[in-house]
Amino acid sequence: MSAAGSEKISAWIWVALAALVLLALAVIFVLPNVVQQYELPLTPRVAQPIVETPANPAPAQAATPALSPFEEAQIARQRREAQDALASLLERQTDLNVTNVSAWATEEYDAAVASARRGDEFYRVANFADATLAYQESDQALAQLQERRPQEFERLMALGEAALLASNAPTALESFSLASQIDLTSAAAVDGMRRAQVLDDVERLLAEGDELQNSGRLDEGRALFEQASALDSSHPRISELMARNAQLQIDARFTQAMSEGFALLQQSQSDQAIVAFERALQIKPGNPQAQEAIDQTRTELTLQAIEAQRTRALSLESAEQWKEAISAYDAILALDSNLVFAQEGRDYSARRVQLDELLELNLNNPLRLSEAAAFDEANAVLKIATDLARDLSQDAQMSMGPRLQSQITRTEQLLQQMQIPVQLTLVSNNATNVTIFQVGQLGTFTETTLQLKPGRYVAVGTRPGYRDVREEFVVGFGQQLNSVTISCNEQVAAVDRR
Image 1 (spheres, helix red, strand yellow):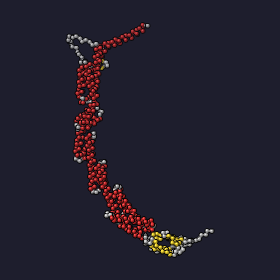
Image 2 (tube, helix red, strand yellow):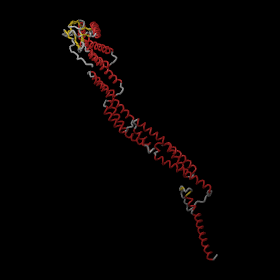
Image 3 (tube, helix red, strand yellow):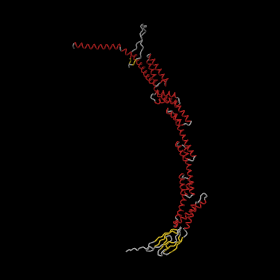
Image 4 (tube, rainbow, N blue to C red):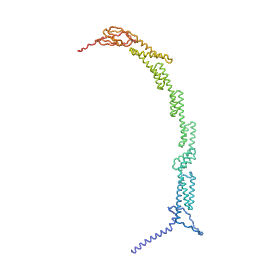
């Protein structure tokens, strides 16, 4: 190696040695001051008072033995533990102070603070172990208060609600205020404070409204209840008083409708009375009083209608207007199908209609009686009519009536006339063979006389080579017929069959 290289290496060695010297000086003079001010993990120490050395120091006493590094480390650890416990309780204290803990847990909070102050006293004399215990005791007490906040919140809310019910505004306001401080996000607590602030006004409005309501001024009372509800819709008495007001309003309208209905009944306006009672039933659905009034009124109307139709039916029976009487009885049965008098009256009127029609049939069409079956039927109908007339004459409450009497009389006369023969002369040409269907074959003749009962007859004449003739005629019944001519005079042209 050259001389120049040796000189260069020696320069670097001198620089390194100088740095090492400086580092050693720093360890000797600077590091103790740093350690004196900070301990791991670099937590600031509690400032220690500086003790000045007097100019003329007293005679030196026996020196305190120096602490070993192990003892110093134990003390440092105890200091850190005390400081950690203090930091935790200070954090809890800050959290609790936001909720005004001294107002809702005064004794417990004061006890926790006292434990913390006792820890401070131990700390000042460097009794870090006891300080730690005192701080931990305080921290645990504050932790219990934090855990107790939900229960305390519920207790204060319940207390506030009870105070509202008791109309105790100051207690309610205080309780809800403390609850709102425990839970800053509680809308219920804020609403409770608002309700407590207006409680006195609400109670005043409810008292005035209740007084008006009790005096019958329902609308005015309800208006005050609505004002109170606008201030505090959750007040329990508001819903109670409003419900009572609504019921009183219903009762008043119901009573008015019922009174109107009974007044109309007194005026014999039953239909309008039912309308009033039905309005009352709409106001109070299912009310037995209104339903009974409706039923009774309808029953009365039905009875009135039945009596009116019954009177009409009896009048029509007396006038022998049997079809109209049936209509009256049908109207009665439509109101009450179980009425026996209407059932019997309709049946009787129907039989009288049938008898009347049979009698009128013979009287209006006497020619039909020329047939034996019709004549026998007419006799049977006449017997029914005469038997009925006899029964009616024996009933003091019923009479035969002029129509039936006239029908019986005219039918008897008609049947008697049907038995009296009428002389009739038949004229022919002595070449025509004459037959009367109801009598028999008469043969040829120029003139012959017959005794015929009243009725319709058909005479037929035949003659070889001549056209047949047919003659219908009526005997009796006021017919002025003395003779009938039956002759075949129209010759039929011969037909060449070749």
